[in-house]
Structure formats: structure tokens, C-alpha cells
Length: 438
Image (spheres, rainbow, N blue to C red):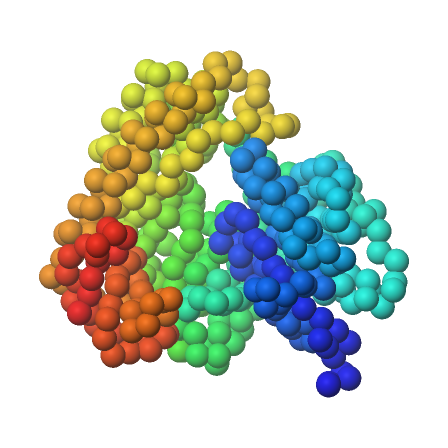
């Protein structure tokens, strides 16, 4: 046994809910604990440590977090249970009251999981007082995160927090104000990924187009610097606000060496009145022109769009207007969310609450549009040969992967994980989840 590792032999289980940023941060926590001897628990093993990284984007998310915590506590009696993330930030007293939870860490202390675990097992008193003040949030320090987990792609956290305060959203309260790492530190992390053999990096954050607010740099400066890192063959931008996706950024990505033709752009509603009620910073003509500009400069680009249905103030007439606009957009896929009332948000002051059954019906209408758009997009590339980064699958001899423009493929043939191969796209697979490639 390595006596230099104070937690050698201890086991941990990690559970993550929510966004890609959360998954990236959990993987970083696991890596930090591994450095002091903690290994991941086996499937049938009772863990010594449980780390839960929570989400609070909807009431459903809160419920899933509570369920996950209860389940982990039952399966791992006596484990040291640490809960962090957005749900822990917004409702720390509620989380701390769950039986079996030992410690609730707010967002600013998420990077301290290794320290508090070490202190716990060294019998140092650690109390829930570390949750801190949940009132007005000041700018917290940026906690870096770059991790791969069990996937081929790496996730590089470049920014955290948000200053936008959209009326339906709790993220500024859960994650704090916008802040970011320096370009120099992010370039060094990308170089480390290259040294580890990584080929693709996804840039993550809460509002990554706002990058540079705490360092005086810009998002354009960042992507220019990352594009020059040798060994990284692909970058993807996880999500970027339409008003921050500047023409300069689109032009650079269109001619860059490594930034892929793939964008995820939040729309949230196709109704200008609803966008006004949401306090979004654009209208539908602006959004349409932005998407059209991306399509003009990058004709093969995959464009995914977030939409929320059933927000307060969204009458049937306004939803019909939004649906017509969304149908007209030259995009590949919709990510549809049903609005959920969040305590403390300005949206609660907006009249006209939408009934749950109406939210469901509206969601289904937009999901039908999404299925048609995705089918049309995939079919338009059948017969083309495109570069695919292969990933392992659970089926022997079968590889999954994504093309440069984010078409999911299924491939049976020679190859290995983390290799980019030119493959010819064929038809949909049997369960209509990917294109078969040869």
C-alpha cells in the first residue's frame, strides 16, 4: 500500500444530474480524490464516500436529486455523503435535512471536496456551516475543470455563472455571477489533453460567450488561441447565446483548423412577446438572421436549439406564433423543455399560468417538428464521406461516434477508440438513433 496516499483503499461513488458542465466538474472531483488514493466503488460494493453533484433547473430536477440522494444513502450505509451543485446552492437547508447527508457545499466550495473528505477521514470537524450565505451573490472564484470521464471527448470549463437574470431562471443565484479562467491557463489545459492523447474538446460553461468578463479577454481571443494547440483536432462550443455569437466568431470558426461546424444556440421562444417577458436579449428576426448567417458560412453545420414551452404569459395564440417561427428555422434539432416554476424568480409575477396538460401538448408538437428536422438533416448527408471520431460501445465490434457536423453514426469494422476515420454515411439504424456508416 502506498502510504503517501492518505485515503488509499477508500472507495467512492459519484452521481451527477444536469448539464455537461456538472459532469465535467464531477469528473474533476473524482480525479482529485483519486490523487489521494480514492478509487471508484464497484457496482456491488458499499462505498465509503458518496458525492452528488445536483441540478435545479426545474422542480422535476429537484425531485430527481432528492431521489438520487435517498437511493445512494440506502445503498451505502455509513458512507460520508457530500452534496454540491445548484440544488445544494439554492436549497441548502432542504438538502441538509435529508437523512444521511453529511455535508452540503455551495458552488464556491465545489473545488474543496478533496479537502473536506480528507478532513473528515482525519477526524477533523466539518460542519454544514460551510454552506455560506445564500443571499446576494458576489463574484466567486473560478473553479477550473477539465476532464474526460469515461468518454472520448474532453470537457473544458472555460466560464461559470451568469449576469443575465432571465425571468424564469435561477442560474445566477445557483452559480453566481459570470467569471472565467485566463486564456493562458485554458491553453495549458488543452495542451495537457493533447499530451494525454485527447483529440476532441467541448468548451463548457454557463454563458461561455460572456467569456473574459473577469480577465479583460474575449471569447474570440480564446478560440483563436485554442485553435493553435497542436494535437487537438476538434473543438465544439457546447452552447452560446445568440447575441454573443458574433459574426467574427462565426467567421473564425468557419475557416478555423479545428472548430467543428456545430452550434447549440438557445432560442427559448419563437414569440417576441414571450421573449420580452423572459427578458431575453434578442427578438425572433435577430435569431433567424443569426441562424441564417451560420448556415451561409457553414452550410453543413448542425444547429441545435433550446426551446421552453408553457412559460407564464405564453397564451395559446403566442405559442402558435412561436411554433410557426420555429418551423421556419433552418436548424437540425430542438431541445424542448417544459417550464417549471422556480421560487424567487421574476417570472412568478407574470400573469397567465399554463396548465400542465397544455405544456405537455405543446411539448409534443415541438418534438414532432424536431424529429422531422433531424430526419431531414441526417438524410441530406446520406452517401457522403465524413470524418468520424470513434467511441466504444457496449456491443463488441460496434463503435459509435460523431461526424465533424455532429451526426451520430454506428460503425462495425476495424478501428479503435479515439481514432478519426473517414466513413461513408448510409441509412438510419434499426432504432433510428444513428446513421450506419461504412
